Image (cartoon, rainbow, N blue to C red):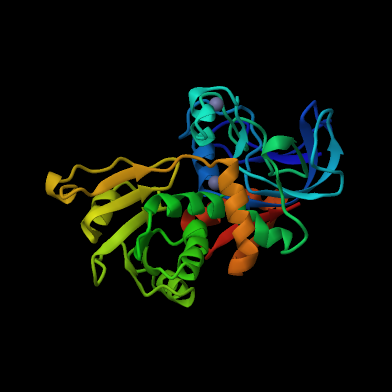
Length: 327
Ligand SMILES: [Zn+2]
Ligand SMILES: [Zn+2]
């Protein structure tokens, strides 16, 4: 197999030939068909997340086909198309797993961070954490759903029943969730980098009621806001944009420091909460809805060996929607 490997944080990924591996008990081997590029991959690259596997093959939005099955795997077969998400393994016994909050498991493994991921021609996954994808939809358009879509979905649920919903950072996750929110008959208010008129037009083309810079106030107070951009300075801005009793959800795994702000910005029962990871039930719920919603996923594809270019383009905001690597 071949892979783009991160040997050390803050160095480019290296195109590497590796020995083929076979799945152990409970595992599957998947031939990778497409792998999305997520902002979390940049945090792994930049060494911003604690205790990564090293060296590591990044990538946790994997669409592939099973080509070998380990002992004891049930419910999956060779040739089946599956999705491998960020949550790669849990212990199943810790207090969080026991109360159906496996996203907070005490001993988890995360694909492309603490176990090898999908920037490769093949990967090994814990079979219990793979989603059967069926044959509807292209490999490339499904890949971003596996994190941008899933984490977006979880953050939307945590935002609650909000009718007027703000989305800060209109990248891969927001462009998917805007369409889900619209389908749920919510109104979307999209916030982009100040001056990003193309991004604002893109948000409106996907049904946003209003789009503007993150330094602007929306025309009406919002019922909730979700922050997808890893920018702590957005937290007080979003708190100011929501009404009394509203929730602001931070959906990223990493954020720059949040600047101090006067208490009155949080006062009146505004809530600030983060979202961590996903549960398998989130995946089942969201992927089950996808065919009904008819989500249009905007993708830019790159050959697998061009992963460094895809990551640089993501960092610079050089494409709309999501980047996907194709082996
Ligand atoms: Zn656990
Ligand atoms: Zn991700």
